[in-house]
Length: 336
Image 1 (tube, rainbow, N blue to C red):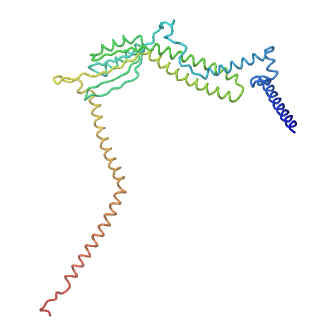
Image 2: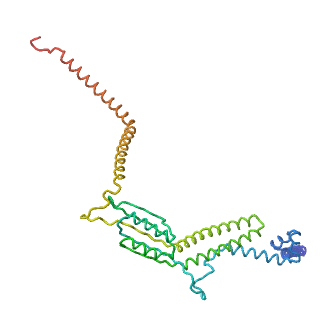
Image 3: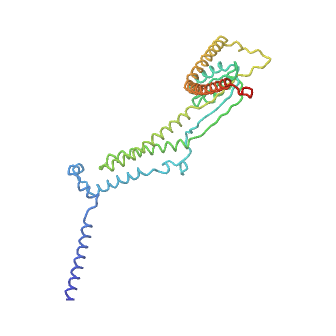
């Protein structure tokens, strides 16, 4: 009995060992999923590249995966490093020029026309203009001028001659490093877009296509944002900005104002029309107010009528009671 049991245990152990060895042999002989995928490639696609061994297919697939991983990862810094050794200072500087000038002038409107002529001669433009009245007959103005960078100083000198300069400020901002950094990042993103486009053409499964398209949309969004920022910087570098403020000089009390009757007819007509509009607005406001108060007036009148009726009824009762008291005979001892 013991011998039979020992033989059964030995037989069962042998079977288990054989099954384990067979499983290991099967797993080691099986191809990887990538090789299996390439084995399913149709004969037509293989014929397009005769003589290409399976190893080259595998290397190509690994290259595609590496490119996708590189496209996913966003570089922490651009390829261009200005601080790296061997990289010298850029020959072209990118500088933003800004300036402001406050002028005290005799006639604001006349000087504004001269300002516009100076800007037009410099092939610039007036991007913003605001004229306001300080007091009766005294005006001021503020304007923003955009002129080519090379004409910044000549235009500023011409503006200074239009009146008495009370304040002049100039500012230079060197954005060369920032400009080059942004331009380098933009070029990297464009190269990344081209690489993702190539990977998209190689993708076979729907999952891979969706994943690459998602990454491609993200990269294109960054390209649009960087392009807009770069365009804005180019505009600020190409055209300098000058803020100008004009203010008419105050007329001394001992001097007769030359603008006392300036546009007198226009000012009279404006005052007349303004007074008529004021009256019409007041009348229309009263009509609107009365119309809005009609529901409230109806309620107030109804409550007042009820109170008046109650008070009137009580007063009548009191009057009748007094009359009854007067009509009753007074009983005295003599009558008895």
